[in-house]
Amino acid sequence: MSHPGILYPRLTIVGCGLIGSSVARAAREHGVVGEIVICDASAAARERIEALKLGDRVTGDVADAVEGADLVIFATPVLAVGDAARAAAHAFKPGCTLSDVGSVKAAVSEALWLAAPAGVFVIPGHPIAGTEQSGPDAGFAELFENRWTILTPREIDDPAYAEAIARLGAFWRALGAQVEIMDEKHHDLVLAVTSHLPHLIAYNIVGTAADLEEVTQAEVMKYSAGGFRDFTRIAASDPTMWRDIFIANKDAVLEILGRFTEDLQALSRAIRWGEADKLHELFTRTREIRRGIIAAGQESVEPNFGRDRGKH
Image 1 (cartoon, rainbow, N blue to C red):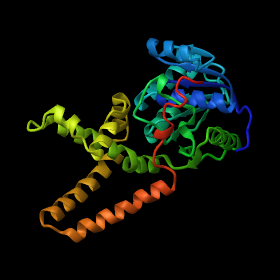
Image 2: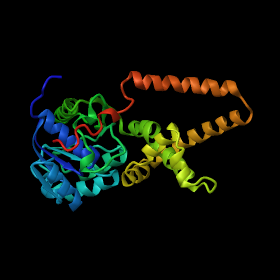
Image 3: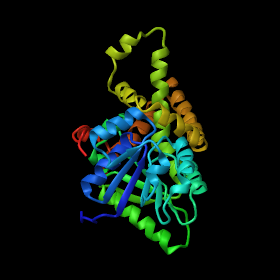
Image 4: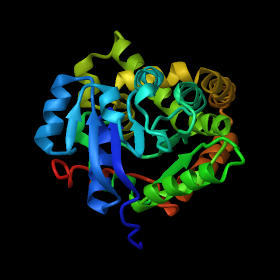
């Protein structure tokens, strides 16, 4: 990969959990920003951010953090993005780019566009990468390598906006990501299928297991097979982040959940009536999807996790 040099003299990251801290680490490692300013509302998080030397400056004041920034990335839970952007609106530098890393785009995009003053470029984004870990210590510079980052700009006939989109795309590619431009509503439907519904199922099945009176919690832990362990890993994800995702993307999630419920009922009938051919056909088709995910190099980031923790 060719080295693009400094793309943004000053980067501000608002919210420094897994994704925010990984952006800071990766941007520093790949030399695509000059100064890094990090804002976090938590005093304990700010203490860790300073100890890890993730930023050149750390603050709890979002307006102070964004002043003079060329790129502002909001890495808070999605329902907090609008409040943070409104609080900082008077301090955005003309010509700066506002983006985010949230798993929901339509609601976040609307919030950013409403908060942004004239002359500021809004380009929502979503790096499809992560682990179930959270907090400033959880990030690592390689998180985005060979992963997709989706950008959802609006269709505006403005050369300066087009240049800002190209620049942000170059930033994410420098961090190792592949970049895709997508309509924000289509993004939310795709992610409802590929991420939001699987998390909802994981939260529900782990909760169901915990509620079974005939099975003790100790037995659930002791006899967890591979499938259930995978569900518990997903269900360990940050509860605030996922609460916000389901509220912000409720229309798409409910649409996909309805389809899933219908398919689940059909599967239940096949099991009840011993329709082995139907079961075999479904399991064969789904196995091919798994093989396609592996072939595309999108199966897991876990082998790298932790290797870069604490570095910057």
